[in-house]
Image (tube, rainbow, N blue to C red; front, side):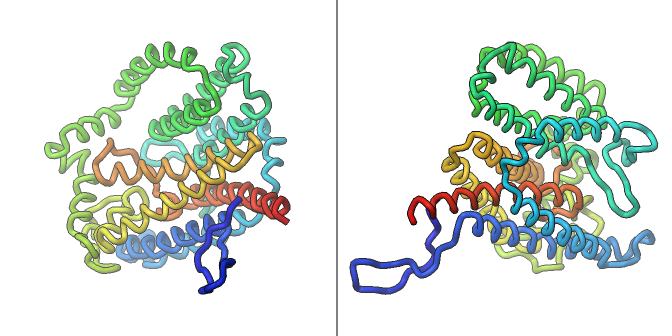
Length: 392
């Protein structure tokens, strides 16, 4: 794999040699560290007042200190995952899938899973919380990459490919809906379909059941989960629901507008002062936009675009099918989640509580994301080592 040249020596000779090369996996790591740095600053800025005045925490540094601990643990997990040859994950893909199902079922059992806000999505181990649905994102990517790589033609076959994978994915989606977590279920469906489509899924097998079942599923979800209906109504007519279900998005737009080009200054957000709910998690981009302006939000967006571009390079250059689809899946999980977060905050899609990767406050999500990045770094480094051997 080609390296990215940052600087070149000034020379009048015909053979100009680069002074410094930045490898793809180092460039990916730099972007991730930059996003984490921005996130740590914004978690502190967005949560200080609330945690300081809350009788539960009474410590303005509560979320900041907790995020620091998770960052340290997640960085350790990243470097461990980076050292493990990515081919190893293929050997355990079925075991990882089984573990995912055990966790998704266990979290629904009262006494094991913790209920919060009407949803049972967490395991709680003292101060540590863990969401099995976060683990499901990387578990499904590993499984699908292994499924496709073992027999690329199988996915095109109805009985050997489409039906078995549909049963597995359908069971996953149902379990996440039962939590209930409609947004994550839809997100998992989008990721899995994207991987299978690139892998050669026969659309003749997909379109008939989708055209029949999708409208039925949509109607059932809207009927069974009233909060979904209210969010859709608020999205269609946000002005009429600015004080109700559209309140969060309305306050986010006010914050983004108030930030202007350069922002009101770090720590000076007004919206985070009890106007914007979930300001350090699901709507942290609004605080970035208000305090750092268009410059700050554009910087964050360009960092994710840079990650997408580098991930695309890894996907294209990787010849091994498992590594190729593993890289694609990891990049899709990160960038699509960022796109959805940005779309929700800017009122471009219905509200769905989803964190901004590496920036929003959260432990298990960050931990799983960093393991995923470690796997991607290993794929990229193996490509670079192979390229060096061929050139040397």
